[in-house]
Image (cartoon, rainbow, N blue to C red; front, side):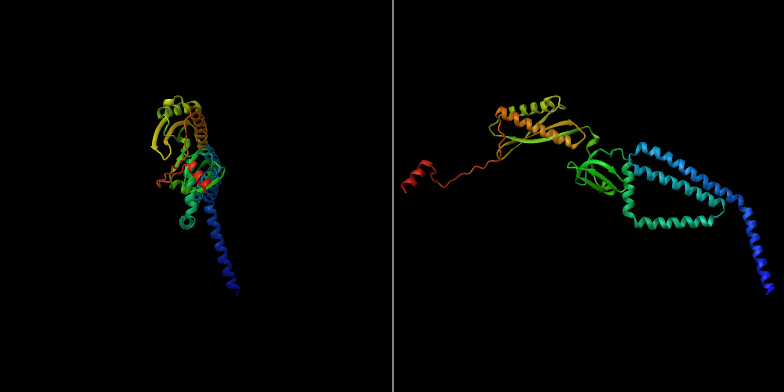
Amino acid sequence: MKEEVSSSLDILLNRLAEWGNTLVENLPNMLLALGVLLVSYFMARYISKGVSKLVQKRVPQKSITNLISNLTTVVVVLFGLFLALSILDLNDALMSLLTGAGVAGLVVGLALQGALSNTISGVVLSFRKNIRIGDWVETNGFAGEVVKINLNNFIIKEADNNKVIIPNKTILENPLKNFTLTNKMRVVLGCGVGYESDLDRVETLTKNTVKECIEQVESADDVEFYFEEFGASSINFIVRFYITSESAIEKLRAKNTVIKAIKKAFDKEGINIPFPIRTLEFSTGLDLNAKKVAEAFSTN
């Protein structure tokens, strides 16, 4: 019994001695690996701050700035970790870690495919120069001012002050009209005048009226005027002109101003803007003379 205890103790002491020797032999590598981890940690902090400042100059969204800063930190720390494992000659552990990370990334990617696509789309939208916060856009059947571009959705505020939240993926996959990219907007207005009107006079008066009430129109020749059709009760025309604007609200205001000015000008000149009229014809041969009808009733 004593011999067995003595043998086990010798084995334990030998194993501890081997571990001690291994520890002493690998101590420089362990200290170097620890130093690499510490250096990578502090480098990650400074690098992420620098990247954050650079991104803030190009991207107004704070969420995007934080995301890129955090990704930078993770990349630098992981690089330091892989370098430390390589210094410790733990290549097998390093390969297992990479394999596990790849499998985990694949599983997470498949599970969150929709969310990740919206997130990536949000990053792409944030770096696009032709879509900025404050722009007036029209997309997916909605029109309004861009108030926020998040990682997952795109928020616009309509003219009625309602906010519409649209997934970023939908924005990238569908056409988008940005009214703010150009500082000029064309206003198209339709109207009609009676058949008895002097059409040349109507055209001249309309052009001059638009020129007088819209400051951006420098000359009456800049106003486009076209008669379109012989309508049921009027000869219809359209008038087109450009205004300096980056918002659809200014377009509505310009229309409002021109409509009131044209109505006043036509009333002053006696030009009729008719409403729909129905003319009824009776071919029965009946005499509808009021006097005869009254006499017939009085006789009866």
